[in-house]
Image (cartoon, rainbow, N blue to C red; front, side):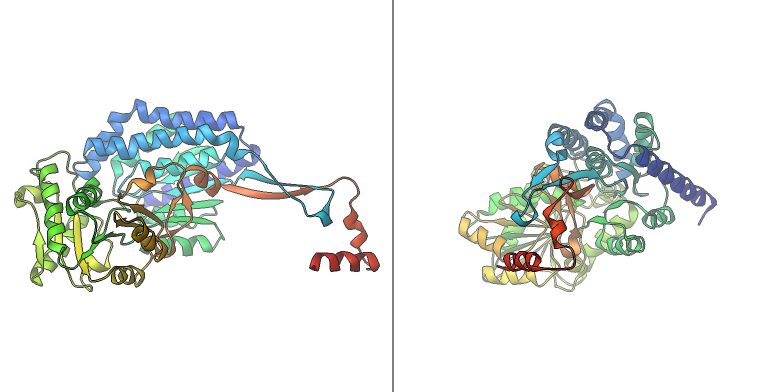
Length: 473
């Protein structure tokens, strides 16, 4: 560990202590203050849109500006506005019924801020995946420290500056640094730890948090399948799947990771997707609308997957492109691989890039078995004009979220919980679910000065026996 990292870790601990002290001094942040906090999040997005967009593009080498506008800035603005709009309702104590045997009494669930949250954000959507959890935490009345990914340093620095300009350090702060800082971050005694990233690192985060019994939300990933039913038109499937796969050059946790197509239609669907890509990005290497791969390491990993398929004699489809220019721009051209072996890297690892394997199935049951034999995915997509068939896919699989004849967009519905299941994550957020992720639901039973339960005290007599018998009926 470097001296700079050691200093950053000590600073991080100091900020956490200050935030905990500030939370003790203001355990129940008034709703008007929380709404003002959410306004500040939205305002800093609007006022600094160009600077944020430039920073993200700098980190990627090239990030399509419209993708940043849609998936980062607009998403956070709308998310903050949605939380603000519904905050009064979500924060209101909820009264519940009291059994007759406990009357008279009043039972209430108080929704109280859980305290100080740690937020670890990834590189693929470096602004949104830090600020959306922050908006949920602020709406719940919490304080928070964000640890951004070291793969996107320019974005991390502008977030650090903007947060410092808009919030006191004992309310919201950003700490930067490499793996040593990130590892230390997971070992601190948070009131809640929110992590977005890979399943592999997520396991380590959960183990580190367990030492302090820190509750965690793990937003992970996995291999999200797209199942094309025999009845669904090829062209329509290609347009939808191609768009979802190529947005942010496939560097999206809920991007279709592989396609299951009816036997005999694998190449037809694959070529249709390549045709869509060729139309959308006539020259991917020089097209600013086509996003680069975030780092050399990730580029080399993706390229190795393609070369592994070629070396095995597997058919690889790509649009015409200048391979040298693409490499120089760190861009992987849109790529479809027809029927790769199940033990190949692209069928084992989450791809996280613009490479799409297509496997065939004989009957729908075989496609469902293929999905169910693997870890539960973060998302699942089914394409069918038959509602009964689509419902069967949903009924017989398990995934964090799902889309019928559409992909990616379920995470943009504010009131749909977003999260994984099993290896793709635990816990969820967005909308009220996000508010509750950073909230402690405190159960309170209130009575008058005297209550009939006093009669149940020892020595037990006939009254206590009658009450027990009544409750067991």
